[in-house]
Image 1: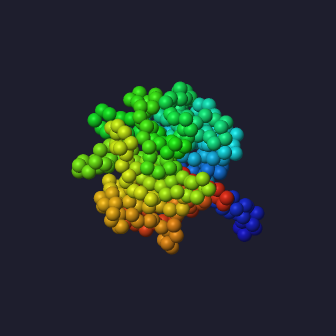
Image 2 (image 1 turned 90 degrees about the vertical axis):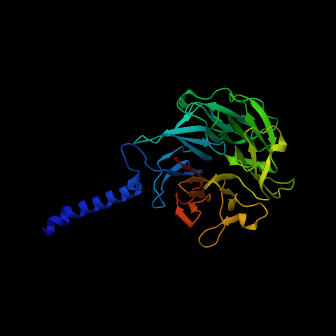
Image 3 (image 1 turned 180 degrees about the horizontal axis):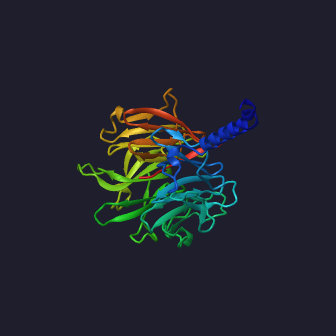
Length: 371
C-alpha cells in the first residue's frame, strides 16, 4: 500500500492541491454560478481593464478578474439590468470607447459598442436611452456626448448631442426625474465650469448653468431644499474639484445643487464651499459623501453650513486620508477605490474597512454596484 501511494498517491494529492489552488483563484463561491455573476459590487482596474467582483458580505475581492477590456484608461462602470457598461478613455491604448458585457453569462466577455471615442462617463436614463461622454485633450477624438440604446448596444451610437459651448470638455452625465412627469439629462463641462440641461427629447442643450468653482466633474441626481421653503426639490448635485490656476496651483472646489426647473445661474445653490469634490453619493437621505484625490468627506445636510460638525473627513482605521475620482453606495455602505490595490468601505456607524483588490502594479480606480 505504501509503495502504491508513493507511485500514485502523491500525483493524485498534488493534482488535488492544484485543483484547490485554481478554485481559490477563481474567487469566492458566491460568484460561481451557471446563471452568471451574483456579485453586487465590482471594482475596475484602469491599467489593464480588469473587472473584479467584491463580496459585499465578507468584504473580500475575487483573486482573478471576471472580465477585462485589456485596455489602459478603463474607467467608469455602470450596471443596467444584467448588462455592465465600461468607459475606456484614449490614454495609451489601441481601442478606446464604450464596452459592455453580460453579467448573467457564465462566461462573460467584453464587446465594444459603437465607434472609437475617448469615453469618460456613462448614464442610463431608461432601458432604451443611455448616454456616454467623450473627452480627449489630444484632439484625436471629439469632445461630445452620444446617445445609445442600453438594450441594444450593438446598434452603436446616435447623433451627438448639439448646442454645447466652445471649449466643451464633457465629464459626468446624470438623469433627473421628479416623479411627476418632468425629467431631464444634465451634462458636466470641465472645460468651461458649466452644467448643461438637455431638452425633453435629450437631443440638444436647453439651458446652461455656471458652477461656483472650476473642475466641474461629477453629477448626482437627488433632492435638496435649495430655496429654504422646507420642501426638497429634484435636481442635480455638482462636484467641482476646483481646477488649477495659471501656475498649476490647486484652487478650492465646491458642491453645488441645480434644481430640475432652474431658469438661470441665480438658481444654482452652493451646498458646500471650499471643498474639492470629484464624485458624490448619498449614504442616506441627508448624508452626502464626496471624494476626490486624497480625501473623502461626509456632509450632514440636515445641519447648517456654518455648523463645523456638518463636515467630517473619512479616514482609514489608522487615521490616513484617502480618496479617488469615484464612489458608489449599496445598502448603506460607500465604496471608494484608492487608485492602487485597495477599496475602502465605510458606513454611517461603522469603521472604515480596507478591501485588498487587484494585483501588484494595477490601479483600482472605479466602483460599480447593482441596485
